[in-house]
Amino acid sequence: MPVNPDSKTPDGVCFPAGGDGTRSTSATGRAIFADCVRGVDSSLAERIEHTRDWRSGYLTPIRDIVEAATVTSDAALHVSHDGLASAHRRFRFGREGQELNLGEAL
Image (cartoon, rainbow, N blue to C red; front, side, top):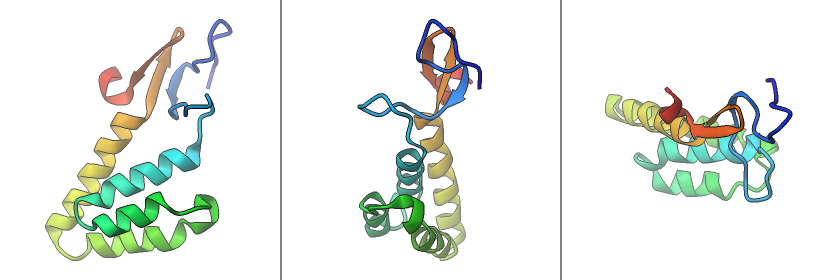
């Protein structure tokens, strides 16, 4: 993704910057997965949020999300809808040094 030389904001779609200024793929992914399942299994969402090493610990929670989504068709729709909504809120779109959330940019 091209970077505007006058800014730390990349041009195009990018991961959100954390409090330390870094753009963590793990933190963003973990948050989106927790959000997607929160409406159907809040304890699973909490477990996802507290997974220490997401890069090596994500497989079991992802399997559990799939399992939670297959309980009913409504659960599947909630997981899908809430996951996409979270991604739209969290991902950023940068242009000429300015950032918007993805939903605003669309």
